[in-house]
Length: 572
Image 1 (cartoon, rainbow, N blue to C red):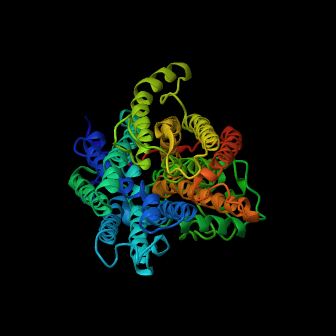
Image 2 (image 1 turned 135 degrees about the vertical axis):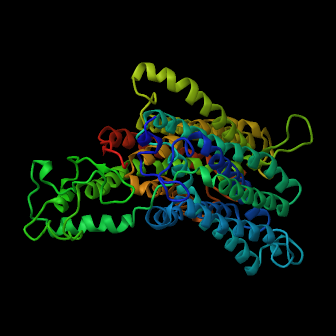
């Protein structure tokens, strides 16, 4: 092997800041530490969040609709804070130090949450006698929500960086390593669900049967193990250099374009400004080839009379083609990004209305006295993912490759579209189940029965379908946003994909608010009352079904016109 071939060509460096040695760093030798970190971190997150709606109801004594909205709002925040972490990672800190710093905040939040559920004085209890006195004090609620939003901040530095950091371990300029990158995203999501499997089974049972102190304490320990796993692989990691503020570069292109709004863009793209060096002006980023869409922004790269190329170029007047294409790449992602919001709303029902629906059903396992916590049914979503990831990676991809000729079997856009289609049937399954359950309630006058004599395992199909849809849509999104993002904004674009989950949670909360307000007029109990036997949650599931169908149609139109990013050359 020639000396030049010993080092990566994508600009990555080792922990000392030297060019990354391909024989000693990266690839699958570094990934176990990243996958181990993600597995433990997700165990901590899901171990704390899966049953949160019941913690709000039973310990903070909130109403069903309030508890559902609070979980949706908090979950949404967990997917908005990645914008903060992504900006810092891409611009200044790099992914390694961003993950390290925010992990410490995460551990502090988990520790405080554990204390809030186990220490007298800040632990929610009933005050006095009777249910009317069962509500958390201001202090108890404040400590609980402070802990939760510290966790939301901590996860903001981890979520957008870990998947991108794992993908950074494979050299884009090496065909052999690049082929493994697509497989990494599958196994990355697999590791997430191994953690979720333990959380939704063992930890939910501990919360329901042992106590919330232990139920939150074990995830806190898991998070500490996640941090230890991450630091253990430091010497093996490949690190992308931060490229400076992407936000500043984007604003520069917009300002320069507006300054030259009356300038005509030449038909010959070679007349647009680009530096002669092999590397782009953006540190850690390859050059991007010119595309014909969004030509207004090309004005920023037109050399005008006031632009003196012999002296230092003013980036607020003249930008390179790569800088312009960086903005175009992000703008082209937005329509695809927007279609993920409704899917995230469907996904979010697993931690809210699916749990409340399961709470009204027979939770016994067979004829035994053992009862399965309603939130533990999400284990079937996890099992579905664990089943479908290897099936997709080892069976579907090779078979599809023979028919399509595409190296990954399906394009990322095709993969996401299939997931959106499957998600429709999860809502159909949930709606049909609720129709049958309510019919049984009316027929036998079970209105005031805590558990209708109908096994909770009838919920399995809706969980299993969402798990299958995740393998196609969420993993497809991870890969799509990483691959289509400009090199210096990969964390930011990963955060954008996570933002769909946040907006999905907020959309769910908004829909619940609107539906509750409209359906409770004239003294009616509404679609989602505290006692679901008097409600119509099935109507809400049908509403999401219709929204999912409309969303799929829009996605197919948008995907048809998408133009893929074209990178030029290497960084070394």
